[in-house]
Amino acid sequence: MTSELQFIRNYIEEIAHISDTDWDNFSARLQKKELTKKTVFLKEGAVENHISFIQQGVVRFYIPKEFKEHEVTFGFCFQNQFVSAYDSFLTQKPSLYELETLADTTLYSMSYTDLQEVYKTTQIGNLIGRLTAERLFYIKSKREQSLLNETPEQRYLNLFKERPELIHVIPLKYVSSYIGVTPQALSRIRKRIT
Image 1 (tube, rainbow, N blue to C red):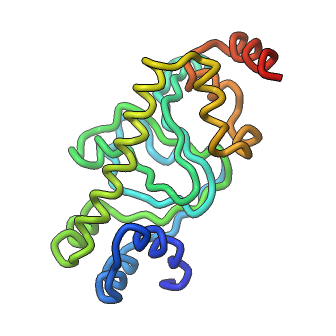
Image 2 (spheres, rainbow, N blue to C red):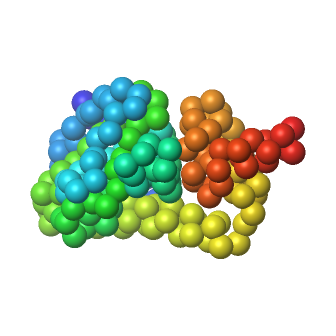
């Protein structure tokens, strides 16, 4: 399985070298999960017990509501990114939101217990933890700044500027929720742009 995980090692080694011993310790604890599109793999009220790396697919962060049309989408994670309900993972308290795949998704996951062991037994463990925390903080910070400083049109354009192919993967109802407008307002924004 180690060669199958080379893409994760490459990602880590963009920041720092990882010894073969540390890599073997880390990679042996990863579990592959293949999820189909529209799979909710963390429910509101459950404790997040895994941190995962996305090999392929898209994950949506959202707050469920009684009526699906009122759900609040507040984040997305993509291929070659860490994903987790990180606040629940850190505190080991119930999550206030859910994680759902928007496409068939392959994850490599590590449990909270295993990650604590990696921290204790490897030199690279704390770097991996820091990378994960920084990435998930960046998503949160970017979202907050976007809501405060940009128009809905700018938020829409920015979402797809970096990954234009995602316009075909993310349903427009989630895009409208993410940028903070109604589906009708998003339709008007799209007409103005085209």
